[in-house]
Structures are given as C-alpha cells and as structure tokens.
Image 1 (cartoon, rainbow, N blue to C red):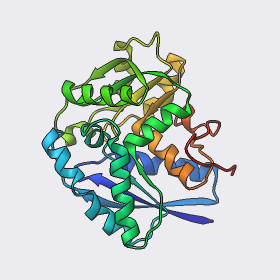
Image 2 (image 1 turned 180 degrees about the vertical axis):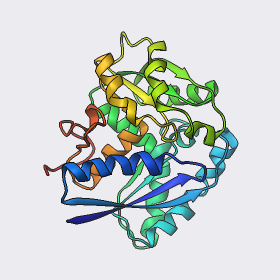
Image 3 (image 1 turned 90 degrees about the horizontal axis):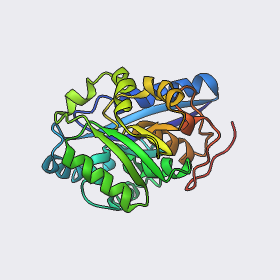
Length: 260
C-alpha cells in the first residue's frame, strides 16, 4: 500500500474541506485499496466572507505553506475559491506561485493546487464552455466569481447566490437543499452545473442525484480539487459516487493520470 500525504491550506472557519475531501478519498480507497491518503491542514484566519477578510487570509498563505512543508506532503491544495477569485482574474496563478515558492524555500518540491484553479481545470476537462453555478456568497462576490470564470473563457449562463455571509453558517447548509436550489437555474444552455462553487458549502451527497436529474455533468469546487489532487499525484481520477468528473473516464488537460 502506498501512502499519499496531502497538505491543505484552509480558512480557520472551514469545516467542509476536511470532511468532503477525506470522504471522497476514503471511497476511493475502498475501490482502489492499494492507495491510502493522509491529510495535514494548516489554517489561515477568516470568519466572515467579506473582501477585507478574504484579502487578509490570502496574506497568510505563505506562513501556512511553510508549516506544511515540514510534513513533506506529496501535494498541497489551498482551499478558499472566493478568496482567490475576489482578487481579480488570473489570481490563482499568483497564489499558486507564491505557495510554491514558500514550499521550495523549505525544501518541499511539490505541486500546488488552488480550488479556484482546480474548478477551471475541472470545467476544461469536461469540455464545458458554458456553466451554471450556485454559490453561498453575497451577490457582489458571486459577480466576482462569474467575472473570473468568464475572463478564463467560461460563459456563465445562470447563477444563484444563497447570500450567507457567515462562513460557519455556510458549513451548516444542508446539501440536500441543493436538489431543490438547482431547479431555480436555467440550464437550457449549460454544458455543466457547478452545484457548489465553494469548498465550504457541502454538496457531495447531492452531486450524483442532481446529475442524474439534469442530464449534464455536475461538479463542485471540492470534486474539482479532488480531481486535480489525484491527477497531480499521477493516480486514476476515479471516486465512486462523486459525479462524472471523478468517474475515471475524464482526463486532466493539465496533468498526468495513470490507470490503477
């Protein structure tokens, strides 16, 4: 059995990154038992999803990466999508580069993933050019996310803001409610549906039921991050029950995968 150590930089108030991702990797361990995954988290302070707190949290990424370097992870994922997208188009590249430099300064030469970059990669891997999405954010932050995606060449045909500013309250949202929320979107032109455009908003139990209902690929920031982690580790991107992106039949255009 091979152990894969995964470093995560998460907001201090995030409860979902450390539940949904391990759940997906545990399901993969059941399907492909020769790979085992171990998680290590460093936290960056953030309680409310406001532009000021998001920017302050980004400034802590280098410190968090330096701490994670000590455990010598095989990959590091930073996990607040809106904190990156709110800084303007293309900022995920800057954030990933900053974290990479901090890790390398400590002797950790490992790939770095942001949930923002991972979502773009996941959409591209699905061949989707038009998406609809659901966020827990206030409308101005959702507009920033839409602008970010559209700058990257992804048309957002419709979006829904649940307008929950407190990050702990976002974690308490019932993922089953997404099975109703998505019906408020116009999916007639969408190639894919981003059911949760936030790693803090739980969605995993609803990914496949909604996908079965709408008939197009359904993904989330969390499933896209998992897809990129597996790809960067050179592993088959297959997780049972996590939607088409993690079916094992989708190739990462920016990564390398191998069969189990």
